[in-house]
Image (cartoon, one colour):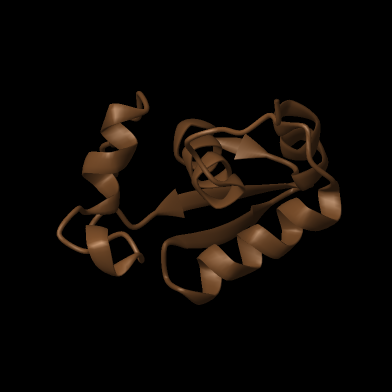
Length: 100
């Protein structure tokens, strides 16, 4: 019997990026069990499509998820990413208030 999962690597990477404040591609690859090169390709795909934005902080990159985009498959375009990620345990972070 072959091994398979319900979620694609893109969904798993997006889920990790949504839940983790700062993480390297190497750390993400180890956690998921795929190559660092694959992680970098997936991050590039997600960034290009507007699902994430990246902000460099030292050796880490802080990722922000755009929860308002819909899923890409034509059969699930009525589902927004934020709702999908909530099912996977994500909680939207509130923006930090700037002090005067």
